Length: 249
Image 1 (cartoon, rainbow, N blue to C red):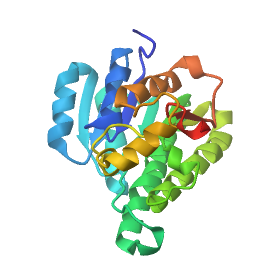
Image 2 (spheres, helix red, strand yellow):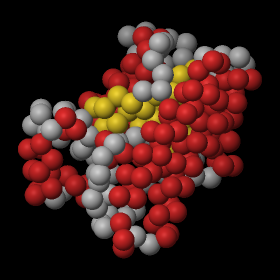
Image 3 (tube, rainbow, N blue to C red):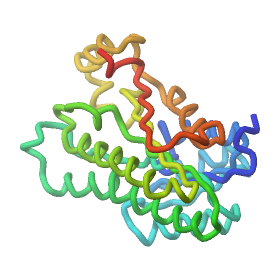
């Protein structure tokens, strides 16, 4: 229960779904966690349920001033940051790539790629400033690894995250900062409703999944806890696929 004792983490997109599940698992394993999301109401509700080990800060990770305020607020409240879980994401367009409008394209990349990078950079600067090791965890997606009809722009953004993971791990490894990614398969969340609420699409995915079910947020959270902990001290630049065996079919 104390695998993460003395560690402080920031989890973005922590007001529901996978982000909330990760935050809860980190706290259950001894970490102090700063919860970040755009909408404060749900964020504060999650924080209240976790007690003093959690602190909410409303932030839009696509906006640099809010990212800087998030990291500064985490340091002010808990004294430091050791772990970053980049989980906040958006997917405003579902359909053929040829029909996407630039507004949806820009929003997708602002949050899913630029947001991940800006938050990583702010935390890395803090870690380098205190000459401390750390762990950065990017929640990506299996669609960043394969062709993804109807999710092409989102998938491109997640492929960019996987590339970012490898390059940052190479650049930051000599300073003791590890960077890894998690690629979840289909998970029952409000974010994934376009797929989970479509019976035909959901059946198609489950039929191809070796474990014959859709995931739930608590299936993903322990992998983040492992990557945050010293148990993964010799692991960097990797993408851990947590998809019930979907991508091996």
